[in-house]
Length: 458
Image 1: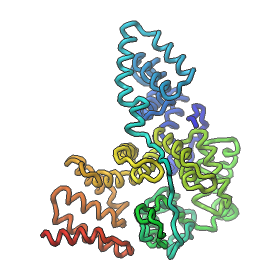
Image 2: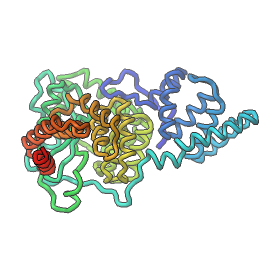
Image 3: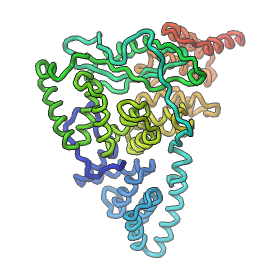
Image 4: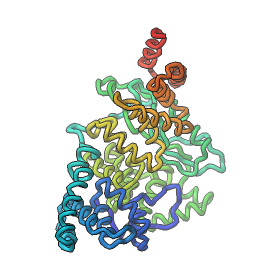
């Protein structure tokens, strides 16, 4: 499960896939000898603890390619990479760099290595950012659906011109069976109005609550709803959308040759438009192939299937490894998903500090869903300071358009005002959150109690 330096790329693939996650962009730039572009990407992933990136940035520092030449820093990063892998090849390179230094510089290099080890060495990574899988990891499964669209829904909102529109939504199911925190995971040619309609309809889904105690304590996380025109088959495309049909055929050809980007993109089209390929196992196999080639977005997607046991044998340990690899490689969606796993503590040990770290990385990668969850993470801590609370408030304002439908957005905005001692505004927003939640038939007795306590104190 290593990032392949010679990973073949397909130029000009649809921009909606944003195929070039950081490490892919780094490798492509390096292949083109554009080291000025490659270096920042390698450096970012190196500082997130990715050994492959550490060895790569070491080489750039050694030769001054895209960065100022710095043999001491080259040794430091190569030593960090060796610590993680114990590779004979990296040991040889590390030794060669070290012996090329003067006696004084050798001492400086060892001191710098010790300094960096405290921040991003193997032990520091384990303690500060890397997930630890639970002794008994679990994934809760929803009960019987009582009402609402099926998991693959014919989109009643699209017009003839939007026949190809599709979206993959993710959501949690609360103990009362209601859908919570709907987010847009992927979309394909959908307009903003269409996405808004899909999200609203997803909130209308209801599930039968399960009786086991664990279902009273945890949300059922990361469920999916695919909104698509279910008649979009290859035969339909051949007649109605020949350009898209040609693209599918091209991707299938490239996928057979083992092209990682083609495998990933084709796999996502198969998920988004189920009639293109009804064989789920084949779809998952494409993601697995791309993930094994080190495609970060495919790693993120394949981790989902490993966690759920859909189309592949359930494997929590391997799923965490792939998700972590993708996060360290710079995929913002993987960073967001890793943050969610650390925040919930179902598959990995709960750690809100680590969750906040990965949410922050994802926010820097412009993941809108991470902004909402970073704000929640900050506001859920008892020791958040004024600057952090202000940051959470600002993040909530930034995602207003995406989250306004969500009663939880109104609740956490109320919480931000309460924590900034603006009880009047907080009370107003809390009342609004309760009203919106009840419209979706959520059970929010805890929110009502907070409002009652506020009214008594007034």
